[in-house]
Image 1 (spheres, rainbow, N blue to C red):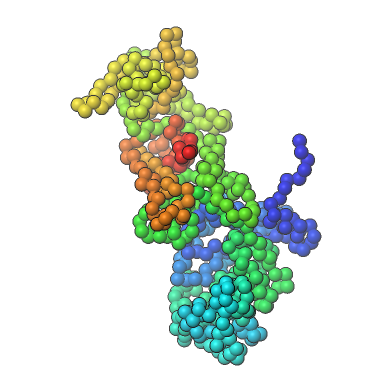
Image 2 (tube, helix red, strand yellow):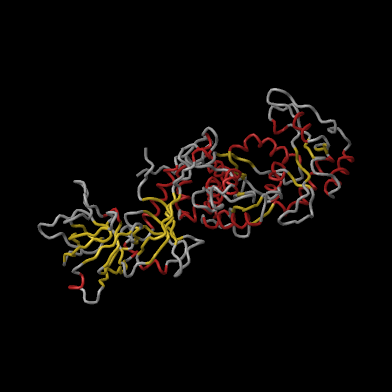
Length: 561
């Protein structure tokens, strides 16, 4: 057995070195979503990283803050705040008392902005948005200084106060940092720090008429909360010089936070990004932010993905600076692996065909036999349950065939099959309607075959699932599949709408399930034997009233090339 210590990813190594050197006594990280939509699975990687580091360093007093960067009231809502809090908890993380909002710091931001103006590091620019954009230049041409760049500090402070008081129209002025209009980094060409927005905020109402830009507020928030390591995805790498500039020129603690970037979690067959998800919701392509076909955390929770599978995926993908896309099959495998260990087994029939055991009454005068079934063969501690077997049963229509091919081992005329956990049955006859559809199959059970081999002369090579017709409960089954047929929907000519999977949802209104489902609560996950993994819908399922199951995932990958 190797005695070498486990190799750390580059971020955890930086943190370990900082703790070992005494640079920091503990670690403070943060997860800072903007409440302008629901979180998606890409955010899960950032959540697992920042909160995971806090858990791993708990003995030093480490913590992770959940902070809402609510600086754009036009797009933010309390609904999104509540959903994000729920998602973080569902993933298994606890922020304790460390819940913060950027809006808590609006006065602090304003004071820091005034300090920049006083020190000649910021100015109020009254060019039009179009002029500002044109004068920024491009990657090959330096920008042009604003005619307001050298206005006296007192004048900018007065104008900034008028902006704050709501006396200046939207778009008529902005506050800009004074850095370098010739910088090769476009983010340093006098970036906008504040803009005017006459929009009510979900927490502060109409108290403010100006709102800070993310790059300005983010640095100050981190400093205010004494964040030691500010972990961001790679698109913020070019923003880091601005992050450090704000920290250097603002009245904040001497030990400024360190920003470190890592690669995003990207998946095939998936469109991520709140803007595109919002488009699908608003256009009715999906039924809401938590439609189980979406990659939002609320959606995959509703679909039945266990949070442990998401955490395991993030661990397997790892923390790197290399951009890449993970095959969605890796996520689906993590889901199957987790559910195989934890999900209880149940029986249900999606496309029912009635069979009648013609000799059942002879051996069962009470009309019912209770078969003992394992709840999970992977977990002995899960125990067993009693499943009723009666004279009339439902089996899957696909499990009976009149003209069966040679290697068809399920029920067929004069053929035998085992009822899972029950008797071996022998087909004696069948009935058809006027269109030739089989309506009933008549069988006989072979006594003394529960848990035993077939009698001599009887060929029985497989077992099928079933439910008792007398005891079955009705259910609606929703068969969800991937929303896109192309593994890179964003790259499809014409956009992701061109590769929507028209069969991403099939609804079965007449499924039959074993009676234990009558008492199943919402978000009950199980494996329907031989069919797949399913979860009772967290919204539409009503315990004891209406049974609605979502297919979480098939037993095997049906998308393999």
